[in-house]
Structure formats: structure tokens, C-alpha cells
Image 1 (cartoon, helix red, strand yellow):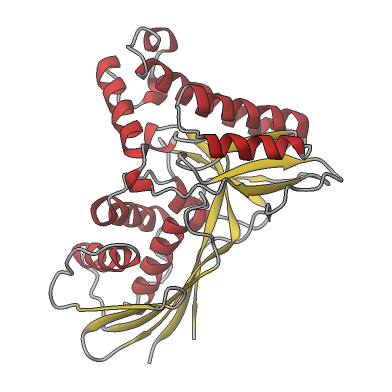
Image 2 (cartoon, rainbow, N blue to C red):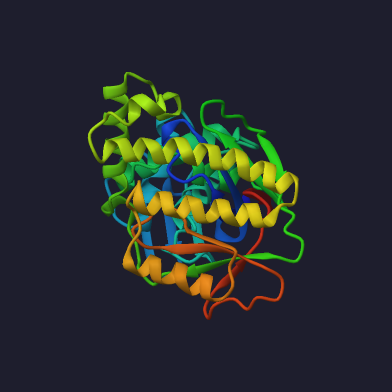
Length: 346
């Protein structure tokens, strides 16, 4: 009987926020925390799934398209349906899901769940080493059509392409299964995440509204993506569309500058870029909250040389770069680049 273990990490996005669905640049890295799906082939033509951390179960026949569902079950139903739609013959299976990445904290627990489930089901169907971009696109469809969150591909690709000790430079106009790796050498400085305490639900937040605003800006500017927007022309757009475009264009520049700063091990410059990214997300993209701002100030009071909100916004976590000897704020989580998603066969 085939048995597999699929692990998909959460991610931290060092810089490059809300650029993925705008054809831009981002610099994420996989973390050590993630979601594990253990699976074995079944014999009854059904897909059984247990979320051990929640004490919940689900199950449905694979002979018919799975129906809609909520919460973690939507990911299971969606992964099975999207793979079957793509022509993958799924065997009956028993899946057990566990996780170590905090939910709702901006570490992309949802993408980790989707990637782990998709890789597990593909492995049980006999597919080995599927292309990362193909897996990411499948997972994005699951979140869009089954969960209700219009995500980009940043979270899924960061989980799939992560490497120990490195960030991954993603160019969303020229996506590759093997993008540029950028060593994350922070010397004796370190990165921490501080949860703002405000839970966020991506599908129910202003995330989808921001995507619609960017699409409207593209229509008015006559461009295929905001990557190609002319800065001068963009400032003639009505507010807030002009500010949404300005964030995307300047954030792309900050990603390029962050790569140069890491290559030169210029950590003060990296800290400056994190601060600038936060200001842009707060003022031009308007996705910060009072709880997030309080978390940023706690990081700065602890001596952070740079701090910014991370993820979709409207809550979640703050990423901070602390110099040597600085004591992290209470409750902060140290993060470092870990390996990407993978499958082990028993």
C-alpha cells in the first residue's frame, strides 16, 4: 500500500508585498514551520481526511465532483476537484493533516495547506516531481474558486521553491521553476515576526478589494499589469487608484534594492527598505490597522532597524530586522529560511 508524507512550509515575504498579482517582484523565503499531510491509498473509492489539530473529519466519494465546503475542508474538496479536472486519476485515500505554522498570522498557513494537500494527492496518484509552477497554479485555483480568496502565486511558489539559507527572487512576469536564489546572510542580525493579535481572513478582508482597484487602474491606464504603468500617467488617476499604483511601482524598486543590499551585506540599507515598504503599505495601499501599527512600534522600541507589516494586511504579523544583541519583543518568533515543500515515500 502506497504511503507518503508531504510537507509544505509557510513563508515570510522579506519584501515585495501585493506585487505578485500585479506582475511585479517579490523576495520571499520558506520557513521551518508548515503543514504536513500523511496519506495512504484506500480501497473504497473515497477520500477521507482528518485535521488532527482541530479534531475534525471529512469524506466524500471520488466518483462524483466534490461539493462546496468551508474552512480546511474547502482546501481538500478543491484540491481533489482541480486535480481531477486536470485529468489526474485519484485513488481512494486516507489523509491526516497536522500543522505547526500559526493560522491567520500572515505566514501563509493557507498556501501551506493547499500545497501539502496537492502534493500528497499527486503522489498518491503516482505523479512524482510535478513542476512547481503547475502546482502553484492549481493551488491558486483552489483558493480562488473553492475558498474565495483571490490570491496571487507568491505564497505557493515561496513554499514550493524555498531553499535553506536563501530567499527566492520571484518575477511574476517571467516565472520559472528555478528562479534566482538570494543568500540571506544577516551576519549576527536576525529576523523576527510579531503577531499583531488581529486575526485576518484573506477572503473576507480588503484584499479582494485591492485586487479590483488594481484591475481598474490597469484598465484606465491601458496596461496589462501595473508593472508597466507610467508613474507620471498613474498620478493622474483618481484617488485612491493613483496611490495603489504608486505602491506597486515603488515596491518593485525596493525589491531590486533589497537584493543589492543583501549581496553587499548592507543591513542598515535593508532595514531602511523594510521601513519604506511599511510606510507605502500603510499610506498608499492602506492595509495597516491600529493593532499592526502597535506591533511595529513594539519592534522599533526593541531596537529594530527595520519593520513592516507582512502578508495580505488587515491584521496578521509584523516582520522586524533586529541588530546583534537586541532582545525581541515578548511573543516574537524568530524566523529563518528553511527547505521548500517536498514529499517522502514510505
